[in-house]
Image 1 (cartoon, rainbow, N blue to C red):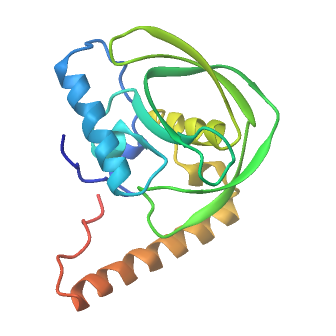
Image 2: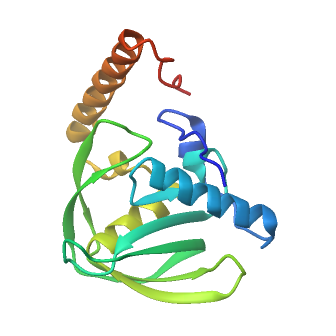
Length: 187
């Protein structure tokens, strides 16, 4: 397993429609293992393959099993995912590993039923609610070349992009002051 670099906006891979996985092999297993380690290292709840520069329909999530503060976590690997049913509505403040330093409230379905394949290719159907539904929809959007900012009004998107540019500029200044390498270049 390895930690892969996380691609940040405006890298073009984030706006591409990802290709379906056709080979369920060691290469896919390595990608899934690396994505989990990368997501865990970045303290993320979810990570799509294109966020590590791989344009395949794969994402991972690690979610609490309940709302309890000390609830155990469950890890999910979704290959070729699709939403087959959605209901309700939830407003949730989302962040994104590809947009470090900003978050915005996004409206999503409160409950979704997904169909996907596991790492061996077996078909799975599963229902996600609340934060799990939000996370799954966020990651599925990535696979379709859609970012959470694309779900905002024009004004909110413009303000969020300004905040993102300020956060990136500050991160670069902080890195230079600390003597570290500067943040990954845009694009």
